[in-house]
Image 1 (cartoon, rainbow, N blue to C red):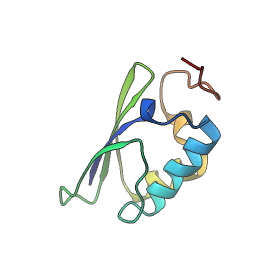
Image 2: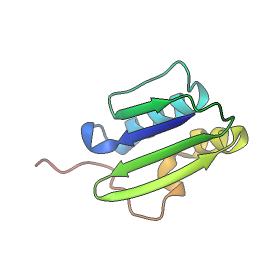
Image 3: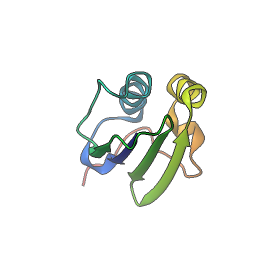
Image 4: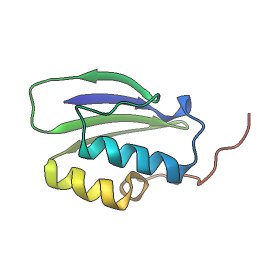
Length: 90
């Protein structure tokens, strides 16, 4: 499965975002949120995530074990850019 996520569409705090994303990682076929731009069943057992977050782009390809780990730890731990807890009002 391949998903494209644009976090700029959702004003939620990082804590809420990580819980929401963790739920998706555990149940990818049954969970969709407002930050998702595309979901494609590509026939792969791996989950490919293309994420845009406040000017940063990241691509992750996860197997089932990695999805479980990321769901528990939070996605922000696995990216190489700082993710603020709160979003600034624009």
